[in-house]
Each structure stands twice: as structure tokens, then as C-alpha cells.
Length: 503
Ligand code: MSP
Image 1 (spheres, rainbow, N blue to C red):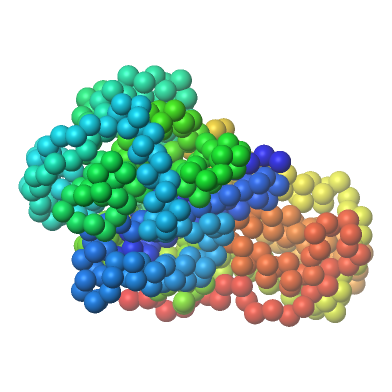
Image 2: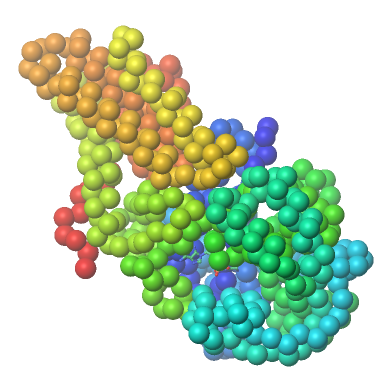
């Protein structure tokens, strides 16, 4: 069975998930679900990045130890991810001793390989990014992401010889065209590397919330260095060599565009230093903005995923976020746009198709529609599913399309939905019923039901709850050929229209 190991970035825990972080988890979840559907052995990992200064500060404010703070944040994150139906196999915490062991083993390894040295660090540090900056990285003296003034730090640190990997990284990127995607992120990274790489600090001193450096207990490992290693901890890097050799390298790291430098420069250099393989693909997705402003905890302009899910359901949010723009590009969340999309594609498009078909089966066949053999002409509509499936498979596979194109996948599926709608209008089952043409009516309704049956696997990765509802509404079994009749039960509308615009 083919293995597919997919990860998302691990989140800082100093506040709960927002639409931006949810965007990434939903995207990765769709990919994971799609690979499971194809029968692959999927391992989908995500979790929390806990050793940040912000955690220490937030814990102090609440009168908790950093560990207590992290442990009580975990269920808050998992609650949101469960409500969004994110189907992860493993949820990790970097404060877990298993991770400490992996980070220390990794550090020892690259230290032995001669890539760590002690030096003095003097420079700027943004605590929200947990990143070191130079003056030229700043916008008007402020952190470009958080619009806050970075602090100046001066301390004895341990450094990783990143500069040594300039050439090997460029060579690797040119030999492995799918390593960094989409293309524009790859070009950004190539420019960064060509601009020259400086060695990076991999330890911090002066506080003890973090993983102790094996070579000097007065230092903790720099949080990014620690966080990146999460990708190999839970697959046995330090404690299960057999598992590790089966699972590594990752098939796909899904991360935001703001952290591609960490994932496409520092992480691969760390892996090269440790003599480990590099991940197959790192995909840097775009950002979700709120009416043009980047959403972030520190900017305080956050719409929570639950604001949407509690009113309109997880699938409405999953659909909207993935339909609006290319995963690699930025997009903008507005309530007006959300409501328009919801009404046109979900309430009118899919929802209406499902309910008007079940309504006709109830009205004309008392809910039990015999399955009969279809003519080639009718089958030409139902068979479109395999064509659409192949399109979606290509669009979601970065190795085939050089991208991840959720929006175009959904567009292709919805083109088929509109063809099915057109078929209904042309065949006019209501006229056939008036004419008592029971045979043709049966054929037409079976054609539409078969289309709905095949729509289910196409939609499953994107809107899993809705697919379960359609399957149970029509009594669909796993295999069409095992069914003798369609057995329709009554169900609530999948996506009731939103009448009043949200203000
Ligand atoms: N902890 C680091 C990642 C370490 S991975 C080894 C981090 N955490 S974060 O909480 O700030 O962000 C988590 C993920 O969410 C990142 O991939 C980030 O790019 C993504 N996003 C954060 N805000 C976002 C939007 N507004 N829109 C889309 N993605 C966003 O970075």
C-alpha cells in the first residue's frame, strides 16, 4: 500500500485558531482525505508549537506554569479542529518528552557532523514571529508581519552553519522541481539563497521554557529549530528506527507563505546536515485576509472558524475557503461573499439538486425507486464522474499539476452538477409523470440518482458531513451494483438558504 505522510505547520498556542490557521488545516485535510479515498496508507500529523516566549508570558498572566497553560490550550485547539472535521491521525505537543528526546538526538547528530559552533549574537528579534531580523527586513523599523518593534538582543548563542548549505540547497532545488511549490514560492526561495545565507542562531539563553541544549544546559534550543524537528519525532526518529525508515521522508508539508524560509531553507539544510532525506514537497499556501488586512492574533482582527461553523456548518466554511481562490494565492474573507457563494453553489446548486431529486422520488415512487438498466445516452451523463475524478486527482496532486488547485477541482465538480441540472430540466420528469410515462420517469430518476451516487466520492474529501447526509438520505450502499432500489428517507435541507445578509 502506498504511504502518504502529510503535515501542517504546528500552531503557536497563545490564542485559539482563526480563519487563517483553519484555512491551512482544511486544505491539508482535503488532501489527506483524498489520498485515503484512493486507498493509500495516510498519516496526517498536526499539533501545537509550545516553546515560545509568548506562551511563557501568557502562562504567567494566567498564573499557570507554561506546561499547564499548554495542556489546557490543547483541547481548545482540538475542539475547533474536530468541529471542522479535520481528520488528523496524530496531534502533537512539542513539550512532550518524546519530542525533547528527538530534538536532543538531532542536535547531537549535527553537532558531531561539525555544523554547530558557539558565538555572540547581537541583533533584532520579533517575539511574535520568534524570528531574528536585520534592519533591512523591517518596514519602518517594525516587524513586517506584526507591525511591532522588535527587541534588541545580545547573547552568547550556538550557531548552525547554514551558510555551508547554500550550494547544496540550490542544487537540490534545481534537481527536484516538486520540492518547493507553487512556482512563485520556489523563485522567492531561490532568490533568498542566491542573496547569501548567514549562519543562524539555534539556541537562546536567559530563560528555561524550552528544550535544554544537550551540550550546555544553560541554553534552550531556539523554538524554530525545535519546532521543525516535530515532523520526525512522532514517526520514530529517536525511538523506532524501523518505523522511521518506512515513514520518512514526508510526502507533503503544508505551510503558510510567511514561513517558507524556515521550511525550504533552514529545515532542508538541517536535514542535509543530519544526513536525512528531504521532504518530497513543501507547499507554501497563501494568506486569508479579512477585507484586505492580514488576520493575526497580534493584530486583533480575527474571525473565528466557529463564528461561521456554528451558524452554517463546517462544510459551508470548508467549501467557501477552498472555492474562493487558488490555495497558493491570497484570498479575502467577507461575509457578503460567503453568503453569495453559499446561496448560489450550496443552497441552489448542490442542495437543490439533492432535495428536488429526493422530492420527485418520494412524490412519484413513494420513496422507493427500482434500479433499472440505463441506455448509453443516459449513462453518458453518469459516466462523467470518472472524467471529473481524473481532473480532480491531477489538480490536487502537486507532482502532476505543479500546484494544489482546490478551487479548480470544485469548479469541475460544479460544472458536472450544472450538467445534471440541465438534464433534469430537459427531461422534465414532472411532464413524464403527467403523461404517466412511468418507464422513462424511472430511467430519468435513476440516471440522476446514479450521478448523485458518484458525486459522493468526488465531494467526500471537501464536504464530508454533507456526503454522509446524501448517502443516508438515498440509502446508498458502497457499491452501486449491490443495490436493488433507491430508498429515500426524509431529511432536512442540506444548505438552507441564507436570507438576511450578515452585518
Ligand atoms: N509555529 C509556527 C509554525 C512552526 S511549523 C514547524 C507558526 N505558527 S502560527 O500559529 O503563527 O501559524 C500556523 C500556520 O498558520 C502557519 O503555516 C501560518 O502561515 C498559517 N497562517 C497564519 N495566519 C494565516 C492567515 N491569515 N492565512 C493563512 N494562513 C495563515 O508559524
